[in-house]
Image 1 (spheres, rainbow, N blue to C red):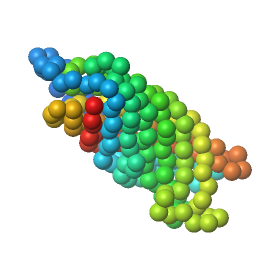
Image 2 (image 1 turned 135 degrees about the vertical axis):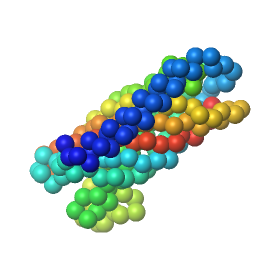
Image 3 (image 1 turned 180 degrees about the vertical axis):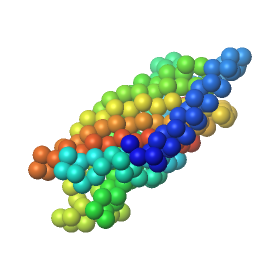
Image 4 (image 1 turned 90 degrees about the vertical axis):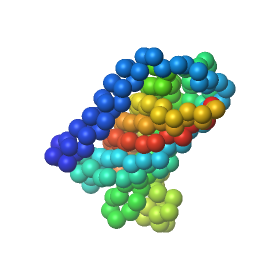
Length: 198
């Protein structure tokens, strides 16, 4: 693993541990925020993506810094602390001078461990596709599918009425099958700001 990737992962891990420690120390928080019914969230942020092809086109040691696009979830609150949802994380990456998107559609469960701190995870369909703005006929127009796993955590820093603003981190791991029996695996690690409505 390259030194750049190690430094980025160390920095992100430090932020996550700090947020979780703060969440656990906030034991006296009042649980006066009501989450009920349908929920919707979209996220703005960035992170790193590492791609590896069995054909050797990409290598995990060469990670790319990128932005989150798209990243949203829609679901339903079963009670004030537990939700079922479908999450659609994804990032843009470059290969062979083309922009592509590696994302997923993930049925998931979200649970508020503390009043403001939640964890989230699930497994579903990985999708590797051309970036919508960079589709070229017979060159960058292939769509590939596979399996992906998602885990994330977040902390609500602001809440009012049915709106919450949270800081979150997300890890997505997945793999797809390309033409000619080539496997493409991806690991994404991101930090973002989530905008949620309940």
